[in-house]
Amino acid sequence: MSIKSVLLSLLSLVLFLGFIIGIVFLFKTQFILGFIAIFLEIIPIKIHQKAVDEANGGVDKAFAKFGVPILVLVGIVFIVLLFTLWI
Image 1 (spheres, helix red, strand yellow):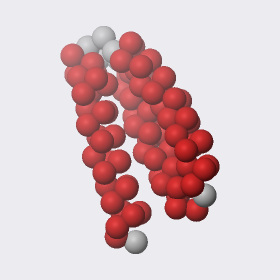
Image 2 (tube, rainbow, N blue to C red):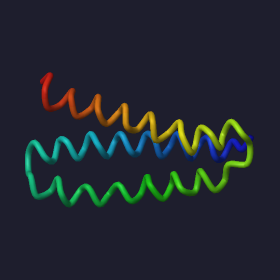
Image 3 (cartoon, rainbow, N blue to C red):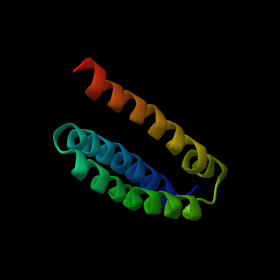
């Protein structure tokens, strides 16, 4: 099990969700900047790819390949619903 892979996976998860919060705020305030901010998602994608490459055990490989994308999708749904419907 690679600790570096797990840490990179968690970092990419936090960056994904942080950038999504920023993108939702930008879309609510300035529509054009929201589209430009979508390109910032390249950073967590590259970190996630590095985490998958660094994984050498079964648990960290499963977490990097399947766990992080599932958590990102759940987080995106929650964040978009939170900022668009509930507030």
